[in-house]
Each structure stands twice: as structure tokens, then as C-alpha cells.
Image 1 (cartoon, rainbow, N blue to C red):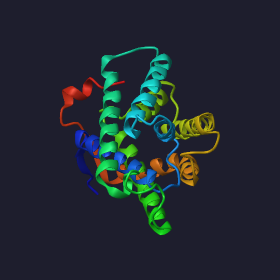
Image 2 (cartoon, rainbow, N blue to C red):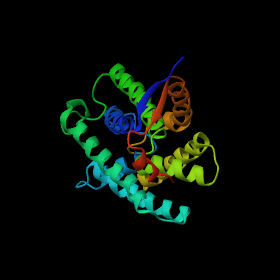
Image 3 (cartoon, one colour):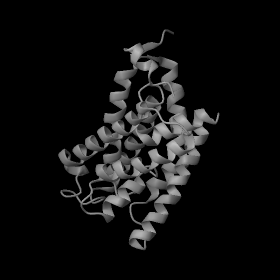
Length: 230
């Protein structure tokens, strides 16, 4: 069967829009958020003048500095991963502003019916896996979280899926530390956080294999793509 060709640039844009939508959706359920965005979410709950998206800039900025230390080299092109994070954070705040169910100032988090919250969680997890799998298949750098996983796993020859699982577990621990430090209790972490920590890496790998079965990705701008080689 002939595979469908998709331009990497289109995949990149779709991944940003879809991932930000998924995060906004999951955060509205009251089941907690994914372990990756939990530190930023918890920070936004603690610091009232920071939106969820703005708190993402803080956490991703710190992670980017850690990446530079581990990578032991810097290229200006690496900064595009942080730019991706800026775009993602802006769209995340936009989704939370324009969709009443996602806006905590309009709809109290987790206040709608249980069945709908579960549907939101399932859809959000699936969209998250699709988005990250697409990020891994484009030359353009994803936001810092996924860029870190992609770049460091390649540098040290570690399976991306296995490294992603370990990365997720590390962020889960960090989320608990921040929650207790800020609120003396669990806040922003829930059953969704645990489920995504255990299964997100495997789900991304599974979705990725399905994508590879039917699609092939290539750059529309090949000369630009050469500049993004890690």
C-alpha cells in the first residue's frame, strides 16, 4: 500500500494546535493534568498573575537550560524549540479563553458531568499522543519538553519511547514536590496524571507505529530542514 505523503511543516502546525487543545481539555476535567504540564499548571495555580501558558514559558525555559548543560553545545537554531513553546502556550491560553468548558473563570474545573469529564480525558490523552508522535516526525523542533526527549535520547543512543517514560516519571515526582511545597497538599495532580505517566509513553509509541504505516513525512523546504539537524 502506498503511503500518504505529508509535509513536515503542516504536521508541526497541526501538532501545536492539537496538543494545546488537548491540554486545555484535560485540565478542565478536574482529574489532574499530564505529568509533563503539571509543574507549569501547579505554578499557575500558585502565582496568580501567571496564566497556564505563561507558566509553561518559565518551566520550559528552565528545562532548556538543563538541555544545554547535558548537550554540552549550543546552536542558535535550538532556540526555535522555545519559540515553539511560546506559540503553544499562547494557543493554550486562547483555547482556555474562548471555550467556556475549558475556561476556569467561567466553568469551575471538574464541575460538569462525570461521563463528559471521562470522555474529555480519553480524547485528550489520544490527541496528546498523536501530537507528540507527529512532533517526533518533523524536522522542526517541538516545544522544549519533547525536544529534550528527542535530542537527549539521540545523543546518548537511548530508545525514544523508553526515555520518554523515564522523563514522564521524573516530572511526576517533580509535580508532587511542587504541589506539597506550594499547597501542603496534592493540587493539580489526579488520576489522569498517574494514568498518563504509566501509559503515555507506550501510547505515543503505539500511535507512532500506526502513523508510520500509513504516512511518510518530508520537508517542503529541504534547505531549511538541513539547518535543524541536531
